[in-house]
Image (tube, rainbow, N blue to C red):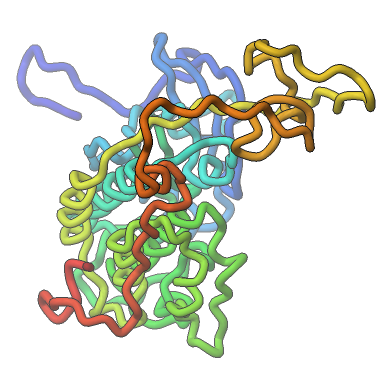
Length: 375
């Protein structure tokens, strides 16, 4: 940042590589590698850029640096500077986000992810994308691997394919990742910011199912690479809030003009998030590997603590003690009678079933020609 006023220093984005202490590699891709490092004691991410061999690759690098320099949003990674290592390779330095990328978090089955957490992540992504679109920036590679998480917050990273929306009608390059790419991009048609909205819809389905959508929902030329909504509804878990699933189907509408804007999505997701009650994640427990009791051997000592019993000796609900197939002693009868209905209410299976998502043909109010907000 240059200044003509006396006493105000001129700042540059170039960092001396010797001021960075590289710790470990935390990721890699076609562009190069990503390292965790410290910069004057502050954790940072250092993205190594392989030597550009073509003018197009050089253009992508210049765009990424220029866009990172010009954006300031809490849900986008913060640009710190650029540097060259002794071999001459360019490195882009940004703030470090400790939780890893969203794809790896969703794949970790040992982690409990509440619906409040999932909607919170979706809300952060929508807010960041709304900000970028207001700045006339098309991201073009929105996917779970390009979303970093820390707690219940999310930040978008990797702006290598992002570009400013041109005021002219010049067609843009076909780029992105097929599984998240909008149909109009795959087919080589003209596209705009609404292509990012479709990619966001695929990310929403990932948040709901915790699986890679392309493995369960193949988008083929027979469907002109559109999303089969009927098949998609079958893979959404029944406990998913119906309103949340409707966001996914609004954003993956085949016709771009039917998709809501990220400004609308950000507003509606924020409203929906406030209606959810966050539930703390239960403590993750590892399965025990104790051997089963030997035949004829003694069972657990009467009166022993529940924590001292091996996992194999626990029977189904209602048989909390003793070895398998041995009924426990009868429980003492309560002094007061409990109505049968109250007994039934204690059974978790007697709880009211979770409401299912509305059928595809359900009518919803329309705003600006788009069924919005989803109900």
